[in-house]
Amino acid sequence: MSEQAWWSNQDFWRKCAIFVTAFMFVVLILLTFHSLAAISSGTDRVPAYSVINHRIDYRFDEARNMKVPVIGEEAPLFGKVLSEDEARELVDLGKLTVQAKNCMNCHTLLGNGAYYAPDLTKAWLDPGWGNEQARELLMTMFLKDPKTNARTYGTNRRMPDLDITDEEVRGIIAFLKWMSAVDTNGFPQGFEPLPQGGS
Ligand code: HEC
Image 1 (cartoon, helix red, strand yellow):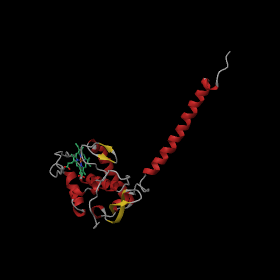
Image 2: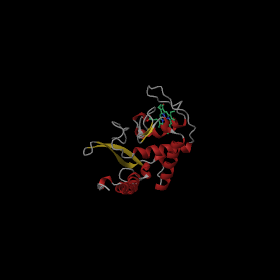
Image 3: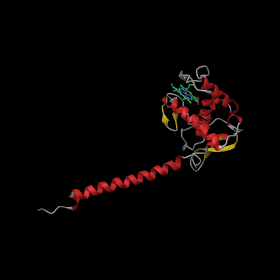
Image 4: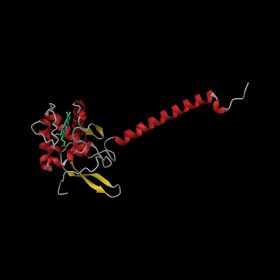
């Protein structure tokens, strides 16, 4: 019988495979918890839902070499300050509506979706809304009736009427406002926020 080198021993490799699989399984679980903590609302980069009660602006951060969100003074959405729970409910309704109506078929949100239509990640701050005062009304009118209120920006692309109820529209706007306050590491590139509050 010939002497077998340790590295050609089947049993050795079987144990290695079991060990590596078990080890990576533990790493995966740890990473999952780490990611969940990093993307939960009320953390460094992802604000609490009640951020919709405030003005959201951006300023250039020298150290990070990019624009970062600044949560400003009180500027309640639809003129009503909401508690954290009420704000979460409204943002949730918006998020569920965006999922149910499949907005991602045409739009991108936080890097997911399509580029047929404008990126919605910072749509709340799109200078196209004209000014801070008109924005809520213009967004509401657009979402209720995107054909009549088409903006198109010379693309000739139209958003279809998606039969969104008044409450869903408010939810979507709350969701878009909250999302605009998420620190997305400078994404989308070169984005310019709507001038607000004399800034
Ligand atoms: C079939 C494609 C399509 C779907 C689905 C769609 N949109 Fe749009 N959307 C567009 C197009 C095209 C535009 C740009 C044309 C315009 O502004 O008139 C647009 C523009 C917008 C804008 C204006 C963005 C800006 O900054 O100018 C918002 C907000 C918006 N859509 C929200 C939504 C939401 C919310 C949903 C889902 C409920 C949705 N869209 C589903 C095609 C779509």
